[in-house]
Amino acid sequence: MKKLYIETLGCQMNKSDSERIAGILSHFGYIETQNEKDADLYIINTCSIRQLSADKAYSQLGVWGKIKRNRPDIKIAICGCVAQQDKSLIKKRAPYVDLIFGTHNIYELPELIKRVNSGEKVCAITNNPVVCDQNDFKISRKNSVNAWIPIIEGCNNFCTYCIVPFTRGRERSRKPDEIIREAKNIIKEGFKEITLLGQNVDSYGKDFQEENITLANLLRELNKIEGDFRIRFVTSYPSDITDDLIKAVDECDKVCKYFHIPMQSGNSRILKEMNRRYTKEQYYEIVSKIRKRFPDCSITSDFIAGFPSETEEEFIDTLNAMEELELDYSNTAAYSPREYTKAAKMTDKFIDEDTKYKRLERLNEKNREVCLKSNEKFTGKTLKVLVEDKTEKDGKIILNSRADNNKIVHFEDETKNIGDFVNVKITKAQTWCLYGETV
Ligand code: SAH
Ligand code: SF4
Ligand code: F3S
Image (cartoon, rainbow, N blue to C red; front, side, top):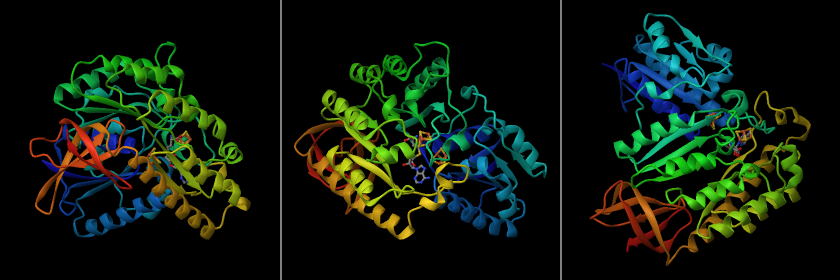
């Protein structure tokens, strides 16, 4: 048995890929270790959404490079979005790396590892991905309650700030039968939640001939699987959310009333500069349509502060949007120029770092304010939660759970376990979580 240590940066798609990488390698005698000191194979699965995430990859490689000086037999691999984008830079900055593989080369790993172990330095980056039958290999799932299932990979949108279309390629959907088969296996294994993943889940099926292959219909099919479990899907592109999707979410009792719909900016001119295909008004309409149908749902978003040419007034539109839309939570980030993207060429319109980070801080402040308000709406209400794990605090066991609408709920109940669905009455709201007691 050889030991494998994987570090995963970035989004859920990367986390899901890492589970698949570990699963594939388990067929070839690799067992995962949490001990960074004594592995035989080190893999970093990287993210390049912002410069900061890309930098993290290189500093991790640096740490492992030092280990390799004392233990020259260890192998170091890098994969994910930085690898896909930047093989020559990796070779220059970290020449001790043994294997570079791209986001489309995961299923070639058996062959790649064989070559690495025979002493070769290997680089495998493909730009024309094929959709592989992902059911041939084991998947080493990290979480015993929630299972990620990628349904569509890649992105055709080319938002002007974003690297993803360059690192993940064009949209490719997995076949519905394959997804349903994976879901059935997961439920049989005892998982309680399925999260369907895609950079743009609403585009699911658009690359197939058959018109009835849509996210809405996929949800309907998955909802028919017997068992006590729930279904989520992320991420939705605002203007791609169809009425049929909203209808399907309503019809399907297992589908959570939760939508992650990144708005990015509350100003229509900036949205246009970002190449987002909706205006501020259209986004407001989508949110109001969803809220009308599902009053207790939650809607979360992403925002970027300091996109090139953003004025103070335009930034204030973003703060107002967060507040007016009563968003339940938002991921926030300062704009980071990415190579190859259109916005990175607007250098004369870049916002200075000081203004950008001050805006980010104001965005975070507004986020905290609206999150608390959103959480306070739930005090006194009963939410159905799924227990995800347990922690001990002051000698007491606290159950950490998530409601159907994705709110984090902590409560105490010695009779409940990880994987249980529980009705919890909310007694206290804080900025990032709720507290309650079993009904
Ligand atoms: N597909 C999703 C987003 C995927 S990337 C969507 O379309 O909404 C996750 C988030 O990272 C984005 O929503 C955006 O807010 C942020 N992001 C992407 N590129 C960025 C950049 N260059 N600088 C700062 N934040 C960025
Ligand atoms: Fe990036 Fe835009 Fe695609 Fe989302 S939709 S992954 S932000 S290009
Ligand atoms: Fe990062 Fe790639 Fe995901 S850039 S956010 S790991 S798709």
